[in-house]
Length: 159
Image (cartoon, rainbow, N blue to C red; front, side, top):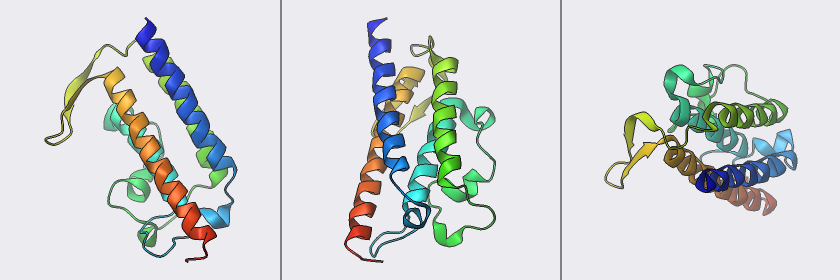
């Protein structure tokens, strides 16, 4: 179906942009929190991974380490982190693995309904896997914008 090919092409494009950005960040930079920010680049990357897994596969189908919830869920922040924090290399590998797993698991299922509709408050409701995948691409782009802002803040020397 043409619509599905379009969505998968967008997924390839957006995930490729995320990976390209990740490859141009070093470990030290990934952990800087500039003034007026509450999270860092590493948190945004982990948050993208966690949310996409959770939103597409639910809490029982997500395949990321269980500790990621405490690290990267909404309302978490690096100041509260404890234990092992994934390296950028680990996150990059997980982004690639996740992309392959999502494409394999949902390749011909984008028009299928989710187990239950996902309500975005009073903004609307997501009904199918295809709608959810496109929503997660919006979410990924939004956090890539946060990463861009963080990089500008870091470059300006506001630490």
